Amino acid sequence: MPISEAEIVPAEQYPALLSATRRGQAMSLLRSHATLTRANRAIAMRCAELRDAVLDLVDRLRQAALIADWQNVYDATHEIRGLAATAGLPATGRIANGLCTYLDCVARFALSPDPEIVQLHLGAILRSVRTEDDAARHGDTVAQELAALVSRKLGEIKDSASGIPPSSALLKRSA
Amino acid sequence: MSGGAFEHLKALVVEDNQHMRTLLRSLLNALGITQVLEANDGEEAFSLLRDKQPDLILSDLSMTPMDGIAFVREVRTSSTSPNPYIPIIMVTGHTERHRVEAARDAGATEVLAKPITAGNLFQRIGEIVDRPRAFVKCPTYFGPDRRRHVDEEYAGPFRRRDDFENDLAVR
Image (cartoon, rainbow over all chains, first blue to last red; front, side):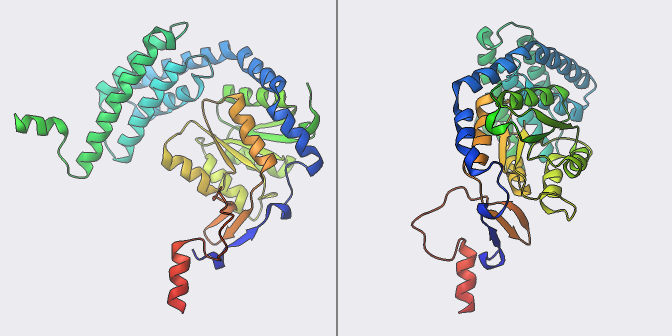
């Protein structure tokens, strides 16, 4: 698109969120330690409720995985990755993020997910969500291991789409 | 509650997850924004936008029947939109590059990745308050300028390679 066809509307020419007189005060509020503390307290007060919500979602994920309902598996996992860390379950969030990345890529290549990959993630999510401090109890290590597995699987999917044989096949051939 | 600068503002939270809606409301309340409207999806949100005229929108990306991308496009380009310039923060659990780019290309002012933290949300609101961006209007896009960095040294009229090539072709 040539720039000559684009019209630029400067920020001064449309209504601002706040008037110039309020901006300084607003920025002080946004940067203030007291505001941040108040907001973090608001999150902390909802932590138990959010954790219950994550548990419900994990149950939904488990049910969907049982019947290989991949769309529901994705939807539940996506909700878990969004809520888990705020609910004090950061490792659960990371594991769910890894599964979402995998499912998203598989869907983009119009493939079916590998049930074993889903089960590995589901098992890890089930264990991490039941611990008091999921990150401290090997949760982070498990999340990292699964992320490495997902990364390898995604590499294989992309190689296969571009006609490159998977590394395991190359190893077999050279042996 | 210190209120002050933000207390007269009205925010609209568009999110199909009730827990996330409540969480966002609490964070906005902590900032002094007490007038918070809530919608379950893009259609309901657009109706609230017309009826209640909020000043700021926080919208999720994945919703049905109208998702966040379609909602942002509707706000920016519909002839019935009451405020195409309204700041919109797209809140999303989708961290994949193509989805973030889709949100930006629909006309979102800021993109905030979940998990949400107070610091991240306040940083995005701070960007809107402190560094409001110019809007670009062209046949394929209407929304905040997607180029965040302005090269102060740059003096020429061309911003893209094809602008330069088109100009050469004309000459």
